[in-house]
Image 1 (cartoon, rainbow, N blue to C red):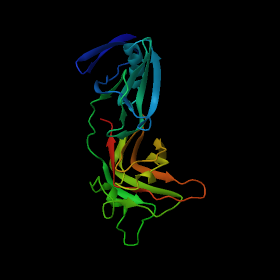
Image 2: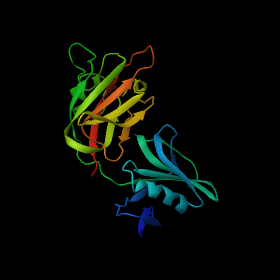
Image 3: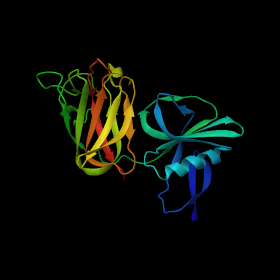
Image 4: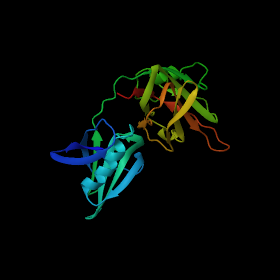
Length: 255
């Protein structure tokens, strides 16, 4: 076992964390995104830990981050002078201004780039209108802000509406980014994102919702999820039906 030092550079501050690891790992570089914290409905935590200092709490979350590709950010809050809590982001996250001002909290994020969008085809379980104006290809046309046809993909109201995105090639999927419509955003709820490869389905994430108008919703997949198809499904509650409508879907492989 050997020790590695990872330097976290955050707004002029430098945090050196001594980390004992048993195998060679690729360190992540985190930068201070803002002072404060993500809003309660802005993300889904995948790991949390307490520590006796900022560095101690951060150390515990970084240990987790070395092994999980979903770690794109870490929130650290001072609960009292001797107790700090870190949270790792995330299974899903709303992009944009979904933050809260809270003294004693910092949110640090990686500087990883998305790379090439691999989404090339879109297919719906049903199409909202008979003229096919709301067809699945609208979800891969590059238009990320929409309200009506022909820029939006929309199903008829049904029990389990789905949108299947075909990828350019089979890859280890890292990020799936959904662009919600500019009105009736609350229709996006109880959404699951699955990656399929070799006829095996892997859950990337589940978003309970409801979404907001114009939301950009980022899902992050677990390590090792490989596939060439991504399916977004909205599950209706007992006795109800739902319409799945999205402006755009983007899919990215791990760098």
